Length: 255
Image (cartoon, rainbow, N blue to C red; front, top):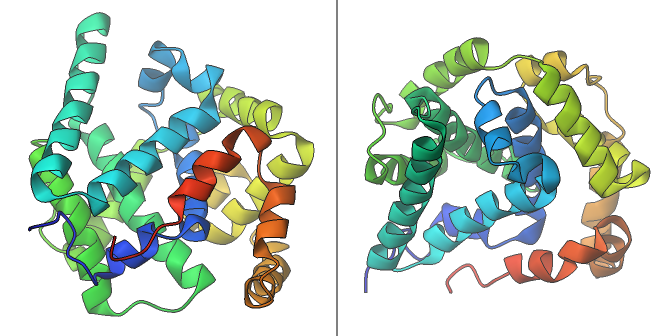
């Protein structure tokens, strides 16, 4: 039986862990807000109405694809393509190809950044494995101009951030929605995570300070995991409405 991501791969280790996925979620929420194509997500009204749910659906779709058999994963990717095609028809224009690439690229980048922040440095081969997984997703979606390997992707990722990110009225509104749906305390924590996690370009555009309280929080959280207090910590900091879904993100890496 062939899986989209082979058992034993680093991609499965990253995307089987709710902690890592939540950090991917935090980084993605920053870049979603800055992307010049974010107006497409406002067109349907789903993003401002439920920004956590919209971002959550993105990361859960990615996790499902990573752990599915090849045929099932390809069908899931085709479904994503079909949903976007329907939105394009309703709006009467096409989502730019670079916007699709940006989303794919931030999933690659924050998979690496989140794992390294919470656990350890990744090897070149592991980074290549991560990139290859999302590269194959992009190929299935018929995306053009995708770099063929991780090293080529690094330079193109930098170029994309320079070209495709800006602070706009959508950015300001979306952060208001984050605050509204998270509450003040969780919103502050989100920004602390983002400050420690996001690239310099993103941090600068959002006005996040370089030195984050997360430098103290992450070691404390790692200790709580060792003492098996992490479930209690999560119960305090996570929105109640999403706790069942977040709990479901934890799964065996070789499932």
